[in-house]
Length: 277
Image 1 (cartoon, rainbow, N blue to C red):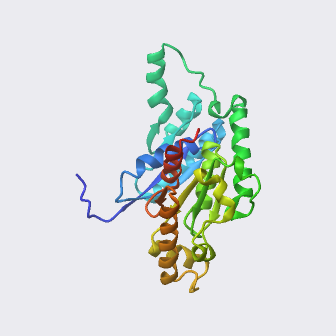
Image 2 (cartoon, rainbow, N blue to C red):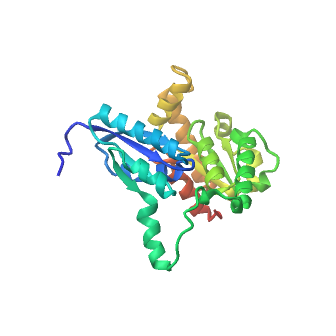
């Protein structure tokens, strides 16, 4: 077994797909995070949908192999067998996600798969696609308390101090789940009044709070406004303490975003509020 105390080893990981590469990247990233002492360079090669593009992918992988002096790891969701075989010839550890999962399913169902490029994003998904676009537009319009109108159509309203992760979580909920998410900052004036923004009370059952440790909040704010009172640790401690006290007082479910990914935060919200996805 490798020595966990050894220096991280640089390896390059390619995500190769005939589509966007998001599926390969999502699955591959989930696996690579299990190796916490390994430092990786990640490269997405999307739209590899012709022999010419497959040869270019092969060239890039081989070139990286020579640079790294380690063979790259390749996560592939290439559907076309001939294109897949070209890329597979590269000097790499080739992980064929479709072959790994589709072939056993073919045997189980007694059916052959279509092997159609881009099948996961077809016109048949138009309803779901439109729902996500609507949700994205809604979340952008209702970001950071910009709009009070139409809150009745929000499926969740995120609250928390500035820079606690409300905007990226709202957009992820919209893009990944098609959920209309608004978000409101909790500001010093709210803490002085000991009340949420008045516009939120009619929709209190839709509220979900995000918090963050003062130390991390100070780091994030200093990236935006370095050396400001807004980013000072003392101010961050005060705001976080007031926000968490308000959420407890108002009976709002909340979580800390400090050590959680956007995916974890969004999934927790969907489960806790029993939102449809």
